[in-house]
Amino acid sequence: MSDLLRIQNLEKHYDDFDLEGVSLSVPTGSVVGFVGSNGAGKTTTIKAVLGLIRPDGGSVTLFGEEVSNAPEKRLAQLKQRIGVVFDTCSFPEELTVDMVGKLMDQCYKNWNPGAFHTFARAFKLPLDKTVKELSRGMGMKLSLACALAHNPDLLVLDEATAGLDPMAREEALDTLRLFMNDEHRGILMSSHITSDLEKIADYIVCIDEGRIVFSVEKDVITDLAGVAQCRAAEFDAVVDSGFFAPGALHYERSTYGTSVLVPDRQEFAARFPSIALDRADIESYMSLMLKGDVR
Image (cartoon, rainbow, N blue to C red):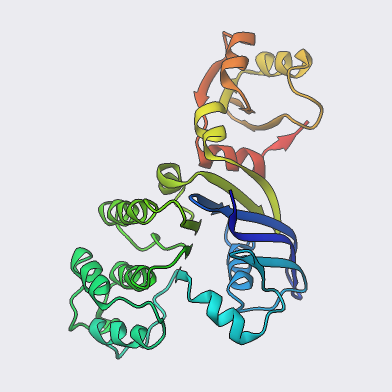
């Protein structure tokens, strides 16, 4: 399986923030969820991928071609194969939806006006409304329609579903699923809405303070991992049991007990059958990895 996008040891240094040693990839036929708190480095990473900022170290490879120091003309050619949706609608406010489509026709050699109007109808975008008249959610739908209408191989989505209500988010996810029917495509999807990623992602990559914390298959989290709810004596028994290697036990104390991140809940349940155990989801997994104590 080849990679549509590969980032290796990416670095970018600012006065108040450092992106250090960031590595991730988007294999063909896969959706990679990119998670982390605000300011963790997701958008900085995405801007480096798109050539909007120049990294201080490491490499970015698009479609098998290293582009960190590529000429602007070559980077522009490769970006023709990428569809992008940022967290805000970036089109000029005075343009109508129809005019945005005509503008994009001048930007992308593979632009498909028919596809754009099909997406506009599906998303209920009024062609005669200006960008400034659109709600945040409708602006996101316009951006998504533009990202899809030039038949990209790679979609890069930075909080693309953040402004949508639950029904509109499900509609957008259905559109992304249809996009992924072509196994040669891929998606890098940054999102705070982890329930969306649980529905569509194949891999989850988490960044915190400019560094990758974990990178795993989504099923490792949702199908295999668990969260044990331990009373004080139960937690002590787990610690003393040797079930976790040193440095591998992630836990968080609360008024009601201690939550423990369990890598294999079936194995844990067989060892500690009396301890309450829930399935992990991306949010609980990420919270315990980022905020929990380690021992």
